[in-house]
Image 1: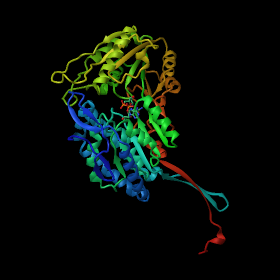
Image 2 (image 1 turned 45 degrees about the vertical axis):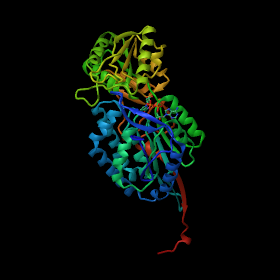
Image 3 (image 1 turned 135 degrees about the vertical axis):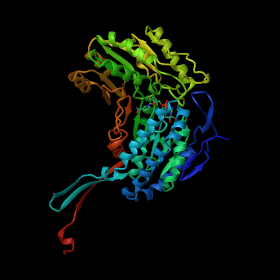
Image 4 (image 1 turned 180 degrees about the vertical axis):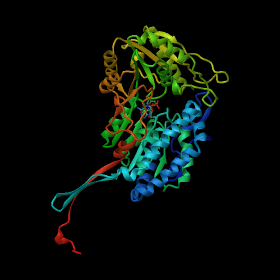
Length: 490
Ligand code: NAD
């Protein structure tokens, strides 16, 4: 079969043992890009076995030498950013600029992981009692695996993988079966790294592959990013199998606007946050909570800013918003919008059914804004994952915080205001892992952990920075005695 993606295991491109294949479709025009294996436990077993063998020698390579591969990894991504971005845009639908931005975030994580010789240092106490010292060593776990979602085909694996291998683990990346070609191309380019075989492996597939990762005894650590129900399943199954699991889930992110917020920046930032990546970002603003007078002064302005967004093919100059990932996703979103209107929401901007000339088979939706959304309604409580912004009005900041804190999700919450004390109260009281103050997408830099609370995250240690280092290492405490009389005196 032509166009079937291969796995990369032990330094070689190998054919899958999967008997079923899924079509990888360009969301912008419905064309077939490739075919991806639906999944096979045998593929995972081979990757786990080879990665485990490679781990035995990789962990002995000094950290200062391991990071030399990461310096080259950064250069490869930067040098090939245009090519990777074009593939990413074709598979995911996001704009070329959005794809390039992903690569910047991936590179940032590699840069932080290059500091691993320092990040691995730990505590030492001399003379805990006379002649006895105690200290901690951080050691790798073995084989790690990342299971990634469709919406960031490049970036997400880099929240984990560079740290894992820098710490001396070996690794398996399982990309989303909707966008598998982007990571495949990255792995082809990474052949230039000349990493020892088995250190970095790529296995394609869907649920069967994921279940094999969850059940394989040689994979002790799993990083997952995806929807909440799957995240919960991954966390519970992995933990029941004795694994270390960090599982980032879905979101419904509120932005609160106080009446004193600066109109121009607030409106522009909210429109960018809600409609960038066609709303398919785990940090996208999907709920605007307008407090008091802000309901009167901001609603029309937000609608006007959204109306100007140009929807189209992400590779075309001037496109600000691409399609949603699949036809099913588009139909699901259209259904949610219609039921919200039937539930009493006001349709303030209707992007349904828009046509993009030359892309009649694309999954396009223009920006949609719904007003008067009832906090008890389906749309209010569902992660739409599309270009839909719901507007809710409240009387006070306290009401807004209370509404946010009732949500099942806690990925991010943002506030727009000129009042320092209101902003301080918000950041102190709001139940969310990433907080933005006059910021629309509160995405932590690579040297901070990517937080997330409630049902947006299952686990303890997050991705990125020192959390990723802690996740991919285990501590060994050593207590050491050297009696004078045992030791030759010089
Ligand atoms: P998804 O949960 O459908 O898929 C994620 C991964 O899990 C994929 O690799 C997929 O192959 C696999 N998978 C899917 N169903 C499975 C099942 N039943 N059993 C085992 N494995 C399964 O998510 P998606 O649609 O690819 O991505 C969008 C979701 O990811 C959104 O909910 C979004 O909020 C979330 N997300 C969260 C973050 C975050 O940091 N919290 C970041 C990006 C995306």
